[in-house]
Image (cartoon, rainbow, N blue to C red; front, side, top):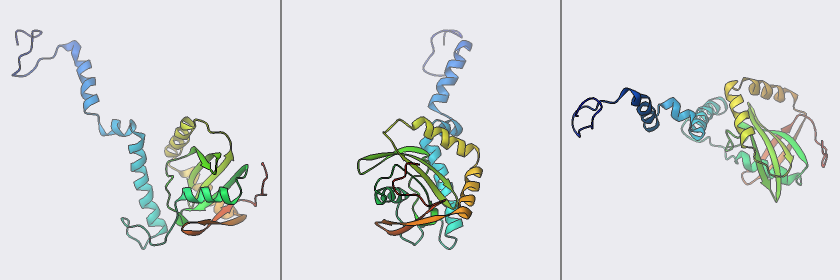
Length: 204
């Protein structure tokens, strides 16, 4: 190197001008991000980590005799199939709100809070939350919209609150169940629960 600010040679330690340190530091972070930065900037990675933790806890609570790394023995349909079958079985109602027990399904919609769901040509805007011992769905028939912002907001809110309000809601729903209905799926019948009996075709 021909001086501190002169051209760099290919060998030996490189001397970086003081005014280039900030720029170089940012470049290093972009190439070698910290684990925290990686998780924060990758919602899919965060969702995958939370899903693993959530699944392990559910298996301990619901299937204490089974291994954490093996699927429980009962044959269970995906929660998404129960959602579709319920809406179809109800002849595509204007709205419906129900709970399906975690024990009865595979929780394939983990991490989704507000999303569009199409069934037989009809679109539903679905609010979904895990509220142990249930998964709660509130479905309203409406045109498709971009719900990504609302979905992210509601999911982040549940994470920040550590799921405590949703747990309280689930336990309250369990004590206040007022009606039930059997939904036929490819894996057999699944019982879903309601806080009160819904009138077929009612708009509210």
